[in-house]
Length: 146
Image (cartoon, rainbow, N blue to C red):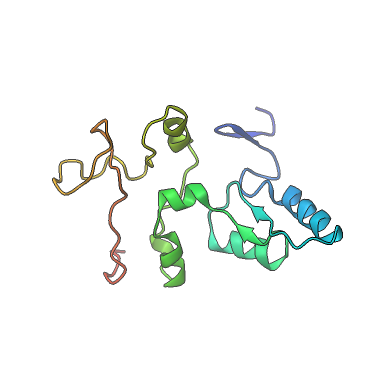
């Protein structure tokens, strides 16, 4: 692809796919502020790490950082970051698996967790019976195996 790498539904050039909306969001935030408004502006699109989100906020490029797919991949992301357990975060791979389910009007799950422990009788399944409806439980007070 000559200088480009692919990410589903997104072309990645030297800017990269992660956080690629931030420059546009920063421009919108400046325009909102310059117009005399205090409306909060949200940056989203490929934001997956604490460092990335913190940098956006610290630089004043946005007032909030949206991590929708990352939060689906690991609903405990925020707690893991807060507890200093970042190595245990289940990172979104941006395959658009969840988006495809949503567009097909199916219960949205994440490919990173939806096929684990399906034979466990305590695991809630999606309506099709083939996917976990909820992510695997994370126990913050257990020590992760290295």
